[in-house]
Length: 299
Image 1 (spheres, one colour):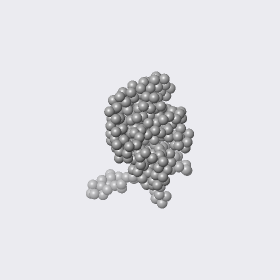
Image 2 (image 1 turned 30 degrees about the horizontal axis):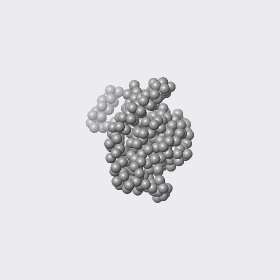
Image 3 (image 1 turned 180 degrees about the vertical axis):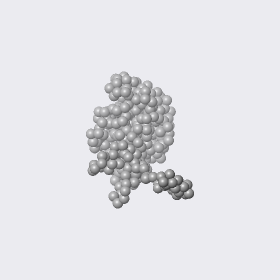
Image 4 (image 1 turned 120 degrees about the horizontal axis):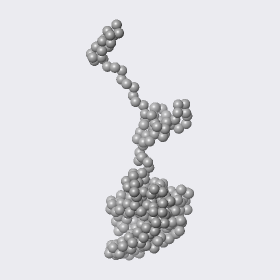
């Protein structure tokens, strides 16, 4: 009897009858809450997945738009292990040896670049002067390491009365502005001159800061120095970016520049402060060249 039944089943399956479909697979987050737990969604800890916020239907998993590990992870992952510090207290990566090498590199490269770029400086100065007859350089007070203020050099890229018009432009700016309470940038600032627009696209207006580097106010690599008005609004976390030498280029300068929000820039600055090394500084200097030539994120 049993064999007949088995044969019958075998014949029925061979004549086109299909077995019931298997149940759909279920996603099991690695850190899901235990049965009966209440509170946060059990999907909250699933990397790369977020539930749709619709209470009227079952959660649908959507890809998390954020890159895995945060903005800085892909950049740091590209670095050879040998140039990342093993310990933040290691004198070869974040202590006296590293700081001495960093200062020596600033002096040697700073002086060399000032001499090498002298003809370009002269051409830029002539172009600025011919456009409106105003001063070639723009000076501004910036905040350096440990909150020390210094005189910050730039080629002038705006109209002569740009600072006087700052409040009016800021008040009238709406959708075109990068809306960060601690950062004011316009993708099409009406105060920028024609020559200034070309200078900003390739960051040529920043070249005079090489004098700040040679003078010891800044470094070639480090977080960008803010203005005092911004620092006055800093939260404690933001102030930690002032614990290291401020610089001309940094992680976020080669990772989108002004396309990133202020908080994203701070995240990258703090990552640099914690993991900086001789190798990382050299890598950032090398990567600054294509980042600047691309013009991406300039404003």
